[in-house]
Length: 507
Image 1 (cartoon, one colour):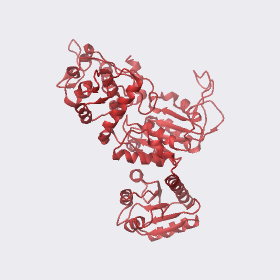
Image 2 (cartoon, helix red, strand yellow):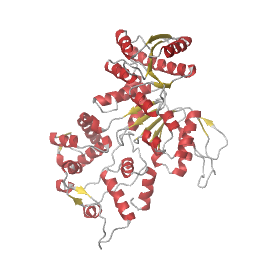
Image 3 (cartoon, one colour):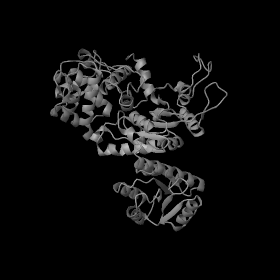
């Protein structure tokens, strides 16, 4: 098989559509095989050699077995052939369901021959690269998943998607809660692809002041606006030839989304204050902890930008969904701690302490677990981490005051980010560590739960700004300084959160 001539399986219950698709595929120089439903499609796929087909054109709506069920059965049989979904209903929910089921591309009927040929060509190219890796043992994308500390089944799916994404140059959208390691996955994709030796530029969209977004993304000329004392190239130009990682892309305001869409579509940027346009060649990988479908329905995110970014979606499970990985992750973080600080004594964790960690729901996911282990390493005096070394976790699991478990107040160390090896993935923000004598004034423990004081010392209701300040301080402490999670739980944007930190002098 070559890119010029491939074997394509066409699955559609409509005879007219089958004939049209067969004619288009044949004119493109490929060999077309047609079946009229999901059952005969599975029979053809399982009966023949695994390499008999190079791509599948699959109708989503069929009377016997629909396209989603066919793709699910293909996974069960380990049939790894790119699937291009065809449907007459192009609603956004349908698109996401197909992509999450493993579809390589999505075409809305009636589809133009050019669009069909382009989709088939890209699918065949992906299949060729995968076949070459299988036969030659070329490390390629497979080696890029090694940094992921995981052995659960749900993470096996993520590793497979990383390998597939690395074999292409399509835009990738990584979805998942804060702290699951989205940037680590983005770096793994880049490391396994053709741009592995090119720049990897990170943009934290939630930490950019709204009035500076265009300048930071696209650059500006000297004197373009007040304070522009020198020329700035911008992140798009910095990433030229490499990969641009847009973290927390859901935080971008609508005006910035319009300009971002144009830059990605046209492959060109115009710096602020410049009269010239510069072409850029880069791959875009985005990440978000927001439900972008819901944001689109609320009018907060552009649907056309979503389609542009979401060509290859990867949904990263939360730590709650991969509890079997906790022991592996704890061992990894213990080893990491010992590498950074030679004075740490602990070499492992006792069973009761591990059971405690498994009982926690980890709202901050892997990053929160990492922070908890680093803090426990500081507290631990023995060779093994014990339950008492995790007072905050024990307090939440058992519903008791952490000061009953440990009278030692130790400031949280600055761990390496899960998402960016060697440094933090967020703009530095103040962490709040109240001392014991001030903690009760902020959030006294009532029946094992923290609450905010609504009244001042005179018995009158406190000012709203004071209550808000204390709420933010408590949230930062509760979520271990994870600013994205703090903003999400408080229902505000990252830029708003940083503004309030400055306003209330919480640094």
